[in-house]
Image (tube, rainbow, N blue to C red; front, side, top):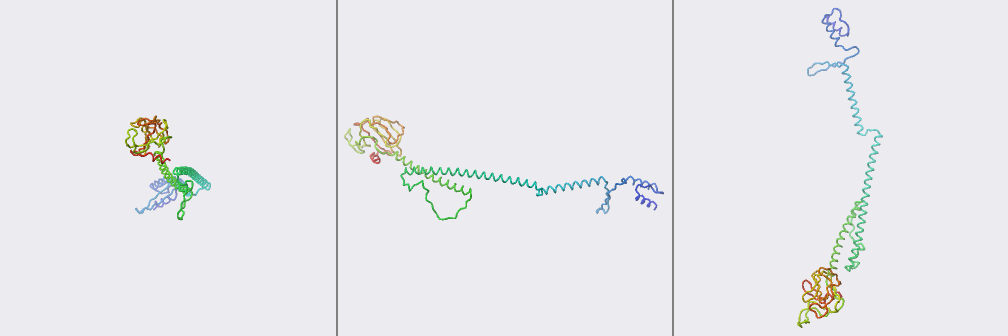
Length: 350
């Protein structure tokens, strides 16, 4: 029992010498405790860990440097959490008022720029629509002029085909279709463009028909082929002046003085200009639509093959070449390969 009391006293008195009467083993234990003991003023931290699996205990001792490291690490973790919380608060709008004002000012400036761009785009669309309206108005003026000219050419009643006045329209009262702003104006202009295009196509067809009719009138033989003289022999059966026999006469003869001007009775192209058996010096003009005219016994031809002649153009001078008894013009009209009486075309012109 003396040894147990000595160990207890040694544990309670750190750094004290061995008691009297202690053994050498006790001195060794005291020396070991002295080496393991911390310096004066520095305390250790002892942790007792209970292990459920082993049903025992473990002792953990933290030295001051290790404890300081743990404390520093804890402070670093706290600082990181604080920084993370500040960043999240900033992202959710918890920012100073002056920074928030700057952000709002920048947003307002961006919206103002967008409004300016929209205003510029609207102004461009208005300008484009104005140009389109001007173009359509010019087109209407041209169509009115064309319609007036065609009316005069066709000799139509002004009240029946009047381009200077708007046509009458009507219909039952229907609910209004809502159209706002630029969209409504653009839709109306599109409808106007479609109507004008349809009207222009109709007028073009009418113009083509009238031009064709006018051309038909120009290429249809009409009028006298000489500027002076009289008819000396008619179309049909007659007594041949050279043989005295009854024969068919395919044209009519105009007697006049030598050198009288001979004119084309319709617009056409010269397809013959020169001597021909029985006709003497002859000019043949093809007019189209199956019409051909011949001018024979000429003293001189004034046109050549391929020449384009208009109605009333001088094409030859009267003579007595070929089978003729004196100065005269033998005039023939052929239609679809058959001779016809020229008198009917002469009477149409009178």
